Amino acid sequence: MLSKRICLVMGKHLKRSQVPGGFTLLELMVAIVLFSMISTAAYKLFMSVTRAQETTQSVLDEMDKLQRAEVVLEKDLLQMTRRPVRDERGMQQPALKAPGAGGALMEFTRSGWQNPLKAARSTLQRVAYAVEGNQLIRYYWPALDRAPESTRVRQVVMSGVNGMKVRFLNDHRQWISTWPSGQNPRSASEAVSAASSVGGADQLPAAVELTIVHEVMGSMVTVAPLVTYKPDRGNKAGDSSQENAANNSPGTLRPQPRARIGESADGY
Image (tube, rainbow, N blue to C red):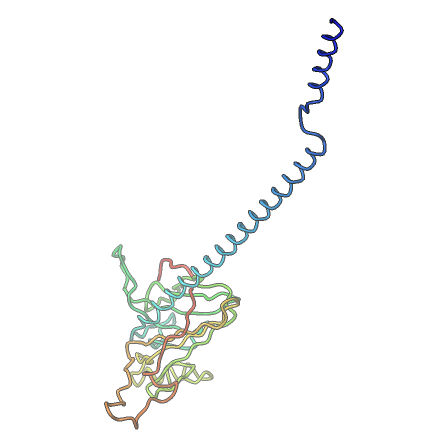
């Protein structure tokens, strides 16, 4: 009887010892491999999303800079006004001069220079644009008629500029690259003097076409009609014989895709 009880107790003990109490080494290895694969996939997904976000943010920042510079250019061009000035030597300069002095592509007078602090200055402003290196630079002078030692303020409007070209639409509906319209690049001073003598120092074109070659955005063209712009009135109702001259008529002007262009700062 006793021996039977002993056998029963030993049998139960053997059965309990055969019940598994944890993971085997193989199971642990499989679990580690699966966890590593999931972690690697999650890390790659995270890095991919991060890179996409950085790229998107970089593009948005660049577009924001281009858009700001576009606003600056448009404000300057659309507010061009008939106001000749005198330079540091006391010589009269036309309201618009292209090319300008000191390597500037153009130099002109604009209105709308806000003066919220009521400083002792005019709301008109003399500005100039030039390309230096790969930057589009805007210069402006605190006073219209400059003193002998007056200084100009330099502002970076846009970076990554490979070149810029400007054209003007004259009264004959022709695009020209210099202004005043009678100006010859080889005798600019004589042409300015002649324009001043006949009272043409305040003449402005009908429109300005600005082409900027950007290293990322490519060629960006802006056409800005000025205060002297007059729509073509040659075409009358029922008269199909008169048409605008192709690509040269003010009535055919259409703004081209423009840069989204530089930050605004004091002086704009």
